[in-house]
Length: 370
Picture (tube, rainbow, N blue to C red):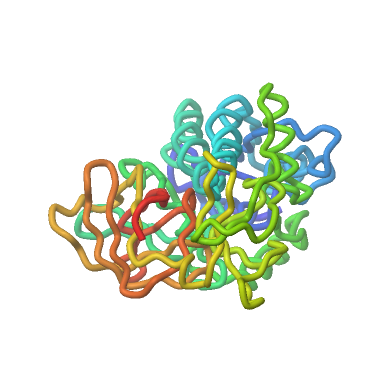
């Protein structure tokens, strides 16, 4: 049981609990600081009879029970909110549709955009809460234009890339207690607090695909809709010469080299440079053919003021990929990004804009541009 000082505010803070150690430590830190804390866990999908039911995956049945145990240990109220229908339409369907369209989706960023903040804030406010707190490794700090989203202090755990889609007008109602900590410090605190999940391993897979078989999940989902899952097709080079056969476009991503079963004319390795869902083709070539010096971005959300003129910044196009210097030109609801050096950028993934460690905004990579 974590001791607490006098309560700092009459309004509670809702701690969003996934069942994992990070969100549990965030809740414990709030209790220790004297806040009146309410634990809240989201039920996002039906995991009965799946690997997720045994734990280790965000918001699965075992994880909900772990969150309940944490709240009991901390002596705080605990609620489970059902977002299964919203999650299915807003995240799972988007995930499947993206793969069927030849894209590589980012369900964690979509979940942050459509589930974890706006709907959860609505539920929190129904309880009279002023704000919600999560276990993300990122920082929210005051700036000249209001609250700014910045990278977490631990570069190995920084999750700001997934958070660009947070509601810009609600940043002041959100808290990331772990933003200044490193992972080993979080584990140390978990043990000091005596949390029942202190040694629980981190989740590594997408929560609703606990066995990691994304392709199988897409195929089953397509069948459940009455649609035909992607079938076999040709692997060709950029001149249309057939080099092999693919097992479904949903099994490939831009820049992929392994598992193609095809090589170039001289036996050299080839990389996926284009996915053509209309003609059911995988196009391959040299690694340079998969890289792009200009990227189109759709559905851009700005966490800072939308720039009226081209702005120099940096862009990150994959989780854990280094950011690359660029020039960003806002165009309607999207943006055009000119890169200082070519990068492999998969349509459907997030492109997140940074000024130093500050997140300016971001959106979703399109198939257009070179």
